[in-house]
Length: 195
Image 1: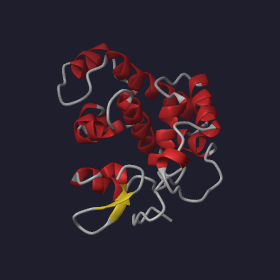
Image 2 (image 1 turned 180 degrees about the horizontal axis):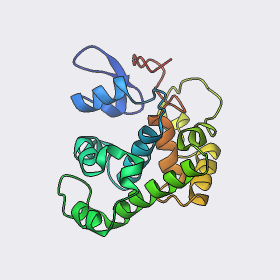
Image 3 (image 1 turned 90 degrees about the vertical axis):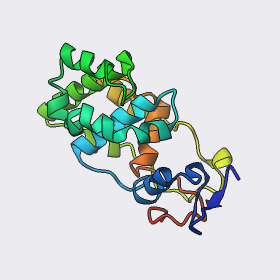
Image 4 (image 1 turned 90 degrees about the horizontal axis):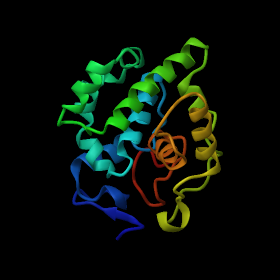
């Protein structure tokens, strides 16, 4: 039932949103809500969350390996050097989301992340500086999981001020959830990340 944990065919209780899809279940069990660190790792999640805008997360998850191949493993230094030929290449790649604004934002975000590093700033540290205090695990998403928070709004503003795009408050809250800055695994979820 939507809004509660769901016991899968394997007998494991999980947050309702991953349903019976094995890829979604692996993502839920092994990644979603676990603390994420590292400049390139945080950059990857930031880009993928931006790519997801207007789409379902499973669409992005199914294309993730293609995104990694197309975007040089999400290495900030490499993506920051992408030019018009790369934009054209990416727009022609049917294995990824071919949206010019999102592709150009990903490249611009790599340049913004590189500029941060050149100034002695860290994308990883910046994101984690907006992590809210831990709270109890939600009982239902409808009542207790927001679409955005004051912290995700503040993170969005901090990134926008540094030249990032596709980093709105809702997208940044999704990053906070997936990257473990908040723990939105529902009460009763058996995930190892649900602590």
